[in-house]
Image 1 (cartoon, rainbow, N blue to C red):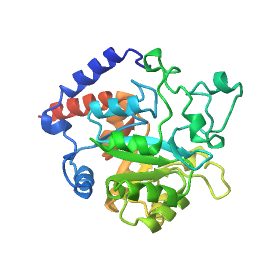
Image 2 (cartoon, one colour):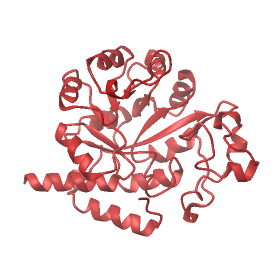
Image 3 (cartoon, rainbow, N blue to C red):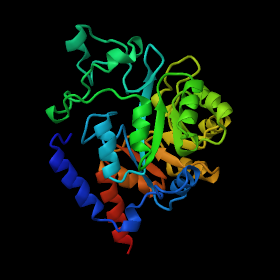
Image 4 (cartoon, rainbow, N blue to C red):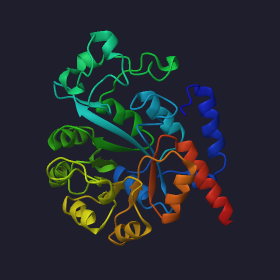
Length: 304
């Protein structure tokens, strides 16, 4: 259930963080050099707290308010999604069409308008906050450039490419001097291979399960992480496994034995988070970072 009252949400976050010592909730030092900061994050000896589309249980997903709340909640990484506008600008958005999280139908009188069909000047007119709560009326669809400026000030961005070429993302990150301080992920493992060719030192997350060669989804019982998927994602240059809850203790260990951390999406239930943490996963992507901090804190407390 979403928390539309922001004051209640912030109280929940604060309560969860108070369960932790300063060391428990510390992220990598924000003042460190970019490469050092990312390396320190990846080397933490606890599972990572990764905010899904920002703190999307407390604010409209993939907006600047959601990213700022994710920082306030001390998220280790802040995940976002991006497409390209029709004029080639990377814009932060999850769905292929605009209906669900903007007022595009009201504004333009059309349903199912693809985000990639509009120039950014038109996308900027949209209200991307009111669908979630009147408290966020007027929140706009941000550019990837804007989102990076907010998130990278205090955390690390987990950039999920939904649509767009590798060269454009590479050039943006080089221009912003952020190439060595982000993680890039995608379900399209061909895109990952292309990006790896341009920037072989950038950590890449292979989201899975990917589509089959013909574009169809794998049958449900064939979507579990296994050695075949691990071989393929390594061949694409990936160094992180981003999977759904169809992981097993054996597959998590197999990945980790190859030096591949396993991050699982999108987990909002405490019991499910505990189950995955018991498997030894390295990170959990969640709409509710406060929930995950609390789970981690209570686990820590139970071992003392």
